[in-house]
Image 1 (tube, one colour):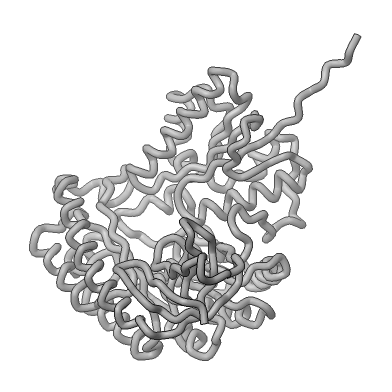
Image 2 (image 1 turned 90 degrees about the vertical axis):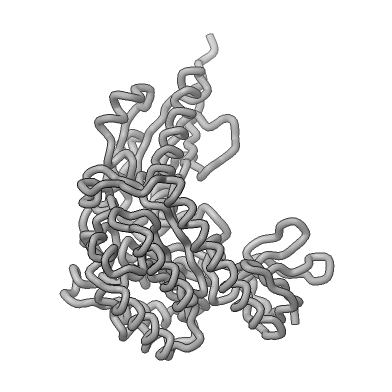
Length: 436
């Protein structure tokens, strides 16, 4: 008799949502592979028999996308196309009991801080020697680095603390070690992310130490760009700007979500600031770093936002002339403080307001980009697409900001390399250039 050959498990990790989730998936990937398990990230191979879905639960659209993905793989399991389906991440953390009832095909649900429990399903151990190491799921020349987990802020609209828990900073030494490991593997740009990077260090060191972290990372040999994301405006540590000004490899770029331009709505949002304080902060940042690109995000349709408050936000955007801007429509999230308020703005009005803000921003971005024509920039090449090399300047982050497009029939660029580019044309969100 022939001995029956057992098919070896192949694991596919699907990531929904933000870059912070992507980091979690990369950590999971490295732990599985470190235990000798054949695992991949978002693989198209047809022989994957186990699927792990890392979900997002931030706003309605993201939740629906995560649920649809779970249902898709639950159906695949019913059809015998996959053997097991596991679900982790924010949606699973927040709605675990409901999901277990509604989608019984899923073999197990895990929260955002239950990686060891998930690994046990594979008879795998959590390897502490792999802490800080990740197998990147994208091009290796840039890497996201999560400097803390969770959030202690009381923002009325936000469900993040419900899903991610309280703020926990990672030690500076651990982050420097991770950065060195990444650089040794070819990483040239590190994007610092957190739920709230402004708060970094308060729990560990009893004071804000984001500037110290930036300085320590800046000393890592071979690290050419450091980019700071998700800096909460209230209590922003101004010594960060001093480090940014003195260190060439810290990009003159700051992602600082402001959320609204009306003091009344900011009060309802529990943001701990006013429009006047936000304007003063932006002006001070620009005075200290004149050459900075500021990215922010705003929310339309939050409870308390009438026509007058929205017009205040319009005026705020027109006066501040942000280099980069994203707009979300308010999502009425259960168990948040704002959920107890009336969600009074119809969805179509929320969207109309968001569209109006983005139309204003498009014009601002077009005018700012026109000023770049004829200037030279250091550009990091990310990919080749549609006959063009696509890169970014130090003023642009991955996927969300402007891109520099270079004609691949005229110039050759290696992916992951820096090239000097002279800008020849510009639209609202794209720059066209020639290699010098």
